[in-house]
Image (cartoon, rainbow, N blue to C red; front, side, top):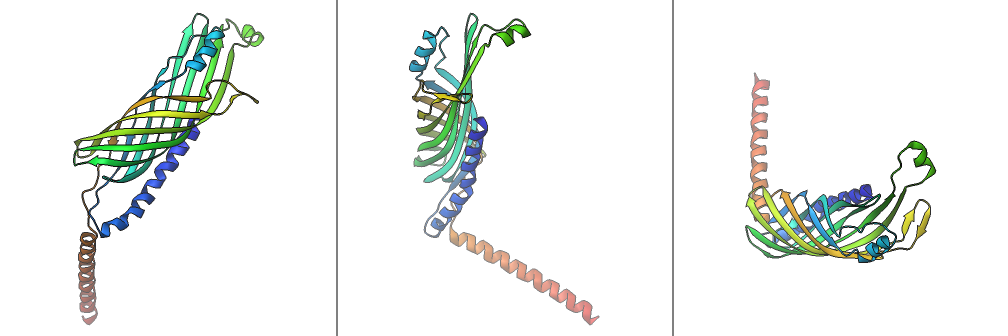
Length: 263
């Protein structure tokens, strides 16, 4: 599942250059500042696991901590004061133990983000966006760890199952610029998922949670700065100057060759 998440994230990030290129036609009529980059994105998830915890505590296992620390990364690109696209992914796990029994809960998700700056200046930006993605849960129950190899063979002690889900996460982000090459981004969102059945080896069966939601709080340190305003006329003038210099260099080379031939 982590591999799938990373592949989804990489695919989303590959769309950033194409998006920036499609936006370049706007330079003909206005000044546009671009922004792009990426970095780590530690995240706290405040999940609603009441249904799942109710089922596993009824079976005699400890409940899962509903606050999950997840770590991942992401990136995006686009207009400083306009539309942007990119992606991010995170993964985290919790372990709960009580006596001889324990529960391991692992959650990973990632996907594509689409966002727009609604307020922007040189050092502070407010952004509204949405993640559309995919992820999965890994749940493992451990009951009475064996004391010997023979006991491990005689009495199975681990049950492991997985569940996949589609994810939607609207969010608001606040960006500040502590230095020219780095931005700090604080992001608040709400994660909502629609999950499949649990899978246990070749078997599939229904079980909580069918939907999973909760608040998220993230902090991204983005390495990469936005470009300053750029006009198409300025770019054309720079290219004309470069062409003139190349022509001059070509003429100088031709003159030198002519002199050598005459000699």
